[in-house]
Length: 181
Image 1 (cartoon, rainbow, N blue to C red):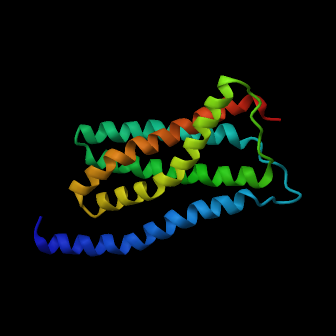
Image 2: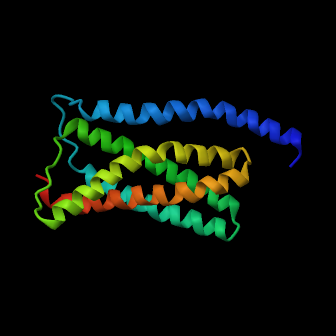
């Protein structure tokens, strides 16, 4: 790539950096704030948890597909699948917030080892779901701005983090689902 193209791509990336920072801060804060908001006189959206768990499962499958696509050097399919995974993650977030704005949180009823396992999975899931936001956005921007070397480097971190968050989202649902009222 010529140095002129590299500088154009660097300018594009710099424009995105502000958005990456803003979204990486605003999304977790908005979710935390909305998590505490209850919409009065609205029927609980109790049908959503299995749907957003399925959305997480589909996200995990799409991420694996994107990984396999790029390993086969199918860049177009990889890019499409990543966009789908991002859309599914956003859809999950909207459903998750909507559910918690209309329903009380479910208490985990397990005891002993399973309780410690559940809380370990839940806590790591929550922490990494926040941590992964800037990684996903930075990785995506490096891909679309053609900064391929740096894209590959950070993708080696982003992919397992994002996959872990998607898979543990499903596990959290499976473990808590017997206790839904």
